[in-house]
Amino acid sequence: MLAGCKAWPEEFAARYRQAGCWQGETFSGMLRRRAVEYGDRIAIVSGDGRMSYAELDEKAGRLASGFLQLGIKARDRVIVQLPNIPQFFEVIFALFRIGALPVFSLPAHRKNEIAYLCEFTEAAAYVIPDTDAGFDYRGLAKQVRDAVPALRHVLVVGEPGEFTPLADLYDAEPMIDMFEESDAGDVAFLQLSGGTTGLPKLIPRTHDDYIYSLRQSAGICGLNEYSVYLAALPVAHNYPLSSPGVLGTLYAGGKIVLARGGSPDEVFPLIAAEGVTIAAVVPPLALIWLDAAESRHFDLSNLQVLQVGGAKFIAEAAKRVRTSIGCKLQQVYGMAEGLVNYTRLDDPEDTIINTQGRPMSPYDEIRIVDDADEEVAPGEVGHLLTRGPYTIRGYYQAEDHNAKSFTADGFYRTGDLARMTSDHYLVIEGRAKDQINRGGDKVAAEEVENHLLAHPGVFDAAVVSMPDEYLGERTCAFVIPYETSVTGGELKTFLKERGLAVYKIPDRVEFVDSLPQTGVGKVSKKMLRDSIAEKTKRLSKK
Ligand code: J2J
Image (cartoon, rainbow, N blue to C red; front, side, top):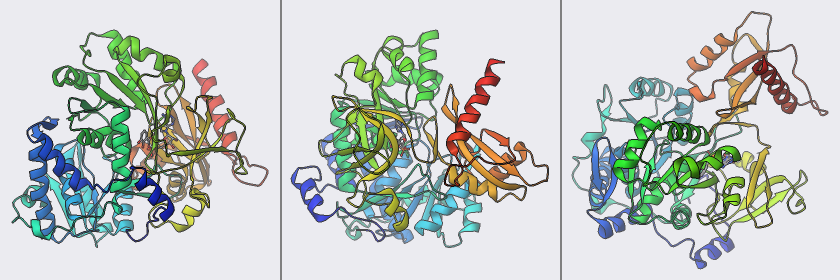
């Protein structure tokens, strides 16, 4: 096991192997087998054309040699920050082939996040596009390299500027004999957690556990070699990556259609042209799709399943999926730490609309407990804890935090408040963790507060969610200023200049003289949430 990662206790590992969850398959082996089985079938469709399984395998192999020649070796960490382009897959499968570990970052991340990831993982390389969605990633890479001089390589898809073109690596002499076959029980990559702390935590996922999650997901979502998955969300995120996502589609031998954005004008024609059968969205995007489908004419007849997850999808909107888009809705409640729940395709309408599904594995263990970790009565709301064959036992190099995030017997504290229905489906009722879920984008309050506190005009700050019709939640920062006359606009600019991803910048800043406290002298976030909810409600009525 990679240093700094906690393995499952042997008794659990043995059970998961014996039950057939963990089958000893690696990602590298998976792609090779698919290339043999499905050779000429199309794996990936994008604006750049089509790539078969055999081509993907061949390119990943060449790139793997290129990485080795550059000096990247087994267990090295490589930050991958790529949008929905075919090179994303070539890069990650090349890294899997040499046993190096992709660290998945999101296209929205900026210097603050990337420099931290590079430093914390002691990354050997950082892979970026030249530009994407109007942003120049080479400028970002310069800032990152200045901040982290130990970063050896920046590899660029497209025009490299002062860095190394990724394209050059494909021409390397084949070095097949030097590939070290990974152990399926070892960590394959590091995924980012939504986070609740000042610094994001990293999630080590093994080949065995993740491929099991792909197999279960593909089965539940009915994927096979004729399935066509539309990737409209950034593929590095755990949900479009694995539930069943792009990797589940490759697992099943299906076709991935890569979209660069999610707008109906871009993706609806793709659904018709490529015969998309399944697509995954977050609730705000689902609302846009529903409105477009209801007001304009598009041919969406190929689409069989629309998955909605990442944040709570309200029942009123859920009801519209079947009538407006004409396909089945599947609710998905999951987390990069592991546990994923799905409503099943043949569930009654009522279950699909009103629940967030049930665990995908019979070996997932769920406990719903009160503040004292005692199980609540059936049907009552409590803290959701979980343990199972694809849920991590600890974050990467985070011993202190792990002691808080996991129970002594290895259950992960999801931080979500849930109840279980009599037929064992989960309904998410809220959140106990200090996080804002901005339409699926997760913002750790503490991280934003720390950045606000770095401003000389800020004495204290508390960041909470406020209700939003479209995103579900937005962020509101309550700030006690020093006497200097700092403005909300200035604070937002300050955070942006510190290199914080834009989705983490507070939507609203409220200046206050004091922050309300709980009985034990902690800031009462509940009171702050209530007060901003009340205020925005009043304002919207005016
Ligand atoms: C309410 N809250 C939800 C839902 C996630 C599949 C799907 C989603 C994620 C994901 C994922 C929710 N209703 N349907 O990784 O594989 C909130 C919960 C949860 C947190 C996890 C996957 N679906 N959530 O969203 O790691 O609070 O993963 O604990 O980004 O999102 O966030 P993340």
